[in-house]
Length: 62
Image (cartoon, rainbow, N blue to C red; front, side, top):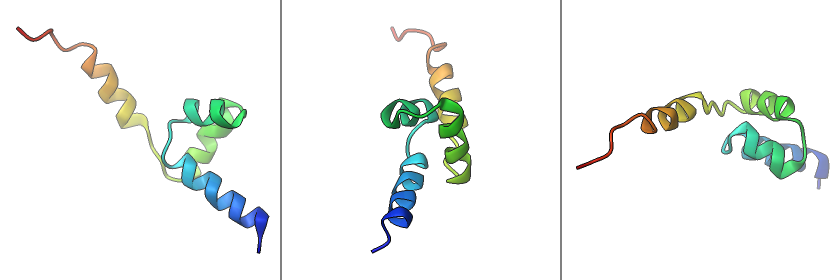
């Protein structure tokens, strides 16, 4: 077993699936560090954040 390598693999997989702010809070690390891990893991949440921002500007139905 390689605990260090396995841990790193798990953390980078998590970084690719969560926004940096959530990852930072979950793991108790800085947001900058979480954002760096996210970029390395190729988990780009920029489009997601833009989509959420656009939703708040849509008019109410009806």
